[in-house]
Image (tube, rainbow, N blue to C red; front, top):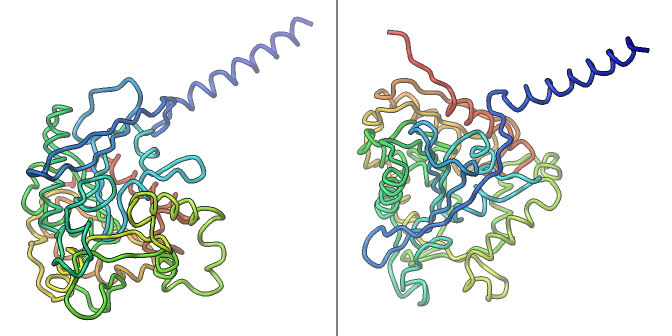
Length: 353
């Protein structure tokens, strides 16, 4: 009898130890995630929307545990980076691993200041929200985070056009950057861009409906792979959040998202014109280039041509993920992206000398 009771007690103790150990495994977190929102002044009249997530009750973070994300050419940051799919967003995933994570919307996007040009027909004004404007917005947020947390540096993560912004910014400000993640990196273009403003002079902004968005999303995907690439309900969840981020565009029929065309003008002038205004060799921090195989917005040749030019990086890595598009962040294989980026962020690699 006593032997049976003893065995049951030891079995229960083993289960308790097992679950306690799991909570202490690297990368695991039992903490709730806390969210805060801010508006940061970039320049007079321009307020940048900033969202922060971090483990609840924690207010002190090291530089290597602090990260800022910026979006691409068309959609705001929160509708992809902080969209809960299967119960968790990428922002949640990083924060749950002990990071202080921020996203920002460049002027004209999402919840940041919509310049007065967006209240007029698009053809009445020239493009706005250029890459240099985006860099000013990023720098304002970097300085805000540094002051708020008392850190000297931050990790930077950019997606698509955001990688051009972050490359250019880091080439001038490596002293403020811990590591640089370029998700779907932009470089000199050899094929047509999927982000178009139409014929004639470039208007101030463009309007995108969700049918157009999905067609662009699936460009380059083999026909027999399209059906199950995006899990059921995920595109609809993203589309609803994206349209809601532009209340004025949402009133149109069909509803649209309005996106500034500064990026289109820069695309023609810089990476579309073969003249890059920054020097990759001036980036003096560790760099990860990561993309998916079916990405037609930033094809593989962009990352492959950029990679050898990053000669100033202490170390660098290029990762290509199978069965995904430019928007793998919201596809069935998104965890492959999350884990590869997290590996790069977490590692304390020091190259041998």
